[in-house]
Image 1 (tube, rainbow, N blue to C red):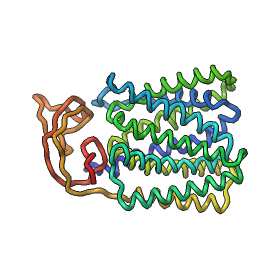
Image 2 (image 1 turned 120 degrees about the horizontal axis):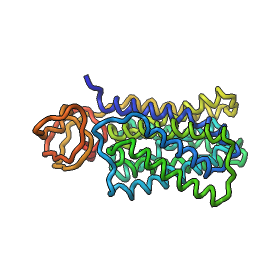
Image 3 (image 1 turned 180 degrees about the vertical axis):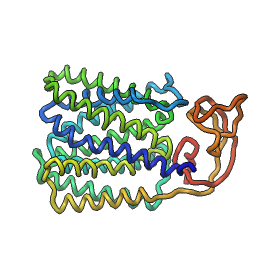
Image 4 (image 1 turned 60 degrees about the horizontal axis):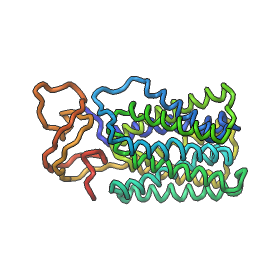
Length: 345
């Protein structure tokens, strides 16, 4: 029996969160004293290594028409956001920085609603409100305890906005081969960041630090992105972003385990609010009657999902990709905000 789209997509989003959340305090530790452009270059250079892992068959490849979108999301998510994040990590505590990453879920939900009209029910709205309140508490706490009052926390918050923009604008790329997207984004992001590092004369770190940051990039940025794209394909940008909000708690827990002691009542209160937001999202269900308009497109698909009834001379086994047409239909079943379920609510 196949998992529902919400469960399948949520599981992939959780896997992405584990990979990314665990990398946050490690990037802070190994990136200490390393320039932000150099840090970003090493992280996204490492992320490309994840494209060497075995890939699914049947995915649609990147097209020339995807180049503009790929460039925009690379500038946002592989250059601007990691550079800002690397600077912020050096000017606030690891616990505060990790928990502030919850703001990415808020920005992702709002941008997904604005750009793709993804549905926001009362449960998701309450979850977003809880996460906003938790993030606000952490910014206020950061103004009292950061090395440069408030600026480190605000830099991390700005990075989450950049990553949210990357995720939402790049939503159509989730229906392309993830290995192609990860490799292209990693290579382009690393090249641009390295050029800026050389242009600003940032010193090269020790080989040990460089290797550690590259490894963090392979897991926390490359492997995480592969899982994230799979989740977006199943449930859309907003739901993926909100489930991904579990990542900061994993990062904060690891930071505490590594000896970080920057956490008081404000941090605990913020963590409780963010945990409430995550719990509301993980327990959401979505099923109702809906209509499909005629549509023609290309993406990986199966013929046992209730949406792909077109014929083949010889039916392929499992998932495969080619351009195909959909006729208008109406039905009801559990679904996320995938390619076939962008209807308004």
